[in-house]
Image 1: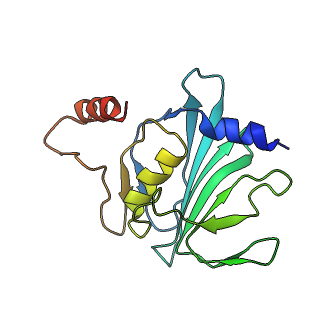
Image 2: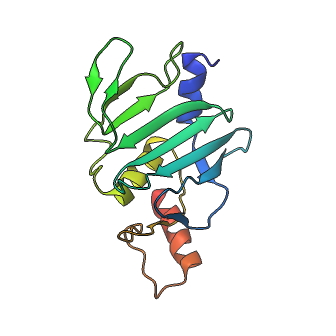
Image 3: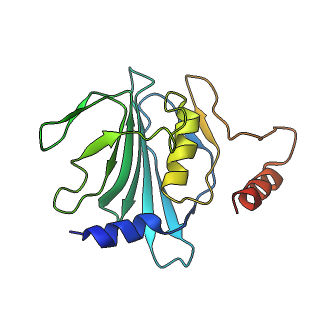
Length: 169
């Protein structure tokens, strides 16, 4: 079990994706990617799940110590009931809470998650929330293509990624 301060410290670390191959999300996809802290002392897992039938239902999740869910957003899923009985809409965020792990959810803060119905924008916002300084291209297969803003197929991808990393600082 993690203490709350340990979980908060892990979530606050700047992270980078280790694998830069595009994240492809066909219906039923369940990819996991490794993240590393800037000093490479900590590793994390970034999980994505896209439903098979309800294509707008997606989960983005960051785990620390391989097993502890530090943060997760559920988009267009079933409503969630917190341990105290409070009901939360089908699009919500889970943050690690000591003693409860990821059992508590809250509504998404619109200042952090600008457009949760756009799965590409939700991916970008969630990566930002989890302090991921870099992120691979993202593509829904069997739906519309979601690319990072500013990407142009005519410019070599490596140059675009370098420019994006510099922009993100």
